[in-house]
Image 1 (cartoon, rainbow, N blue to C red):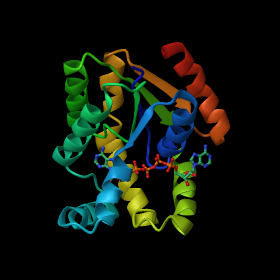
Image 2: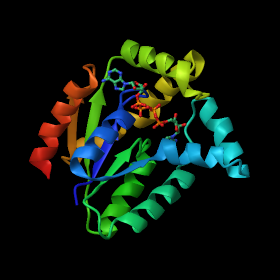
Image 3: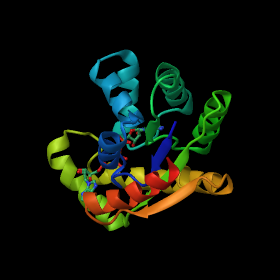
Image 4: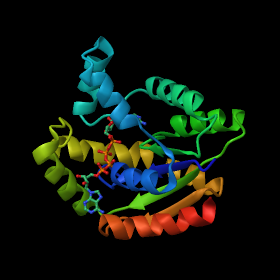
Length: 190
Ligand code: B4P
């Protein structure tokens, strides 16, 4: 199985690149952001709790997200070509939990870091906010998400560097050019 983790700041294009990779490589796509937004849309009590956290630009608790991931791996790992983890792990605790889940199933994952300049991601997210209807695509929330990213998510890169499973691409280009770098990497890793 070819399992890949897409990481990068909010708006770096994790969701966008996941869709292109999924089409070409036939991998399963797990976006923790999408799963959490589906729960919010269901109107459940948990969804209301998630909405309050996410609209402020904060991270949902590790416990909840790890449960989501484990149940996804269990339901898909038997007969799929691989999984794209989009936006997970976002903390060191999540990275360690994913590592444990994969090792228990004799699997591994490569991390691809999409590097994009801050002024570019702010412009993208403000632009997306015009049509997305997302409560977290406004300047206050974007700035909060960026600071959460630097404090809690960026440190996971060192964890994968130590495991020799870290790769980086320049995501400041358009979608196709960014994908061509990921494509080259995946053709070597698969
Ligand atoms: P996510 O849904 O994961 O998404 P994101 O960080 O906002 O954006 P992404 O990087 O996927 O960018 P996109 O492709 O859409 O997270 C939202 C929230 O969910 C988090 O803040 C958190 O609260 C919660 N959450 C999710 N996972 C969690 C976890 N594991 N633990 C705890 N909480 C969690 O691209 C953005 C825009 O740029 C789009 O409009 C796109 O069209 C455009 N774009 C993309 N690539 C481009 C390019 N190359 N050129 C020009 N525009 C581009």
